[in-house]
Image (tube, rainbow, N blue to C red; front, side, top):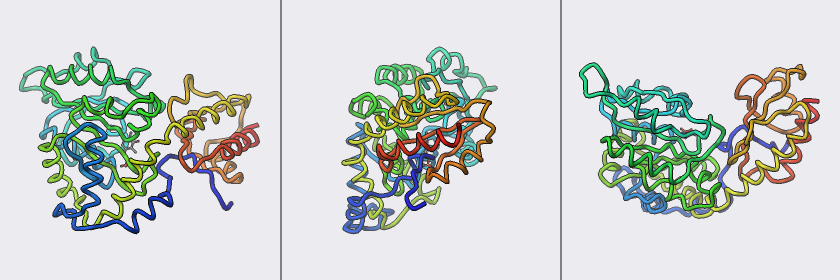
Length: 346
Ligand SMILES: *Cc1c(COP(=O)(O)O)cnc(C)c1O
């Protein structure tokens, strides 16, 4: 199959022609010395868009979250986060193995938020037996909760709640631009109230590599030191940052198209009798599909059969798929995916 339609994730997006041009032209320097003008531009742009003083280009969202948590927390401190948070489930336990940071998992509400009552109930007492509550991490959009977004009002109350108790808030905003696009608001409304935020350039924003961590000047200074410890100090990395600038200036403006295509996909799939979609899906660029017991196919068999139609999908549970739309999936692609599922499952 020549042209795959790849719905496994929005991480599969490739750099756009405009990015490749910007990459070829990028002015570079040694970023460990702070000498890469393109990295500096990206960091300033990210900081101004998120409403923070400074930004730090990091190789991955995982490193961004890790560096942030290691700045906020000392060994033995506790970070409260969702039980289905990416940092808890999918970042190798790095905060514990590398930072000695303890996590307290709180079951998310169905909208992916952490209830303030639950946070209050899990706050640690000033007692030698207990770790020190130091940080709250919120994921926006929340991947495992269905690509759902948080609203500005909630983020503000969460930050107020935390600050009143001497805690900081870090946002794992890997897809925070999707959260903003879904609400047709400026991303700043979601990111300004928190103490730090990480977002990915390499997902819906289509850059080949990288994330940016934003926060205060002092916070970023410390995060930069930790990035170096983690082996994330990169040299003439302006070639990557150049793609990141296009991601922010151009690609962040088109994410609503991915959301519209996710709705189109859900509409098509919902007409297949053996398919059940999660209630309310999609909220952003993810459609969650389940198929009936009457279908005699295992998940990997569905994956294999879909490949025969040039479609790549990835199962995320028993009889369950997460389908992610992105800039490389067009309307015709959506139709092809619906027809492929209909043929494979029926
Ligand atoms: C992708 C993602 C990350 C970071 O992932 P990397 O692959 O390390 O860039 C963090 N949080 C969430 C919610 C994500 O989806």
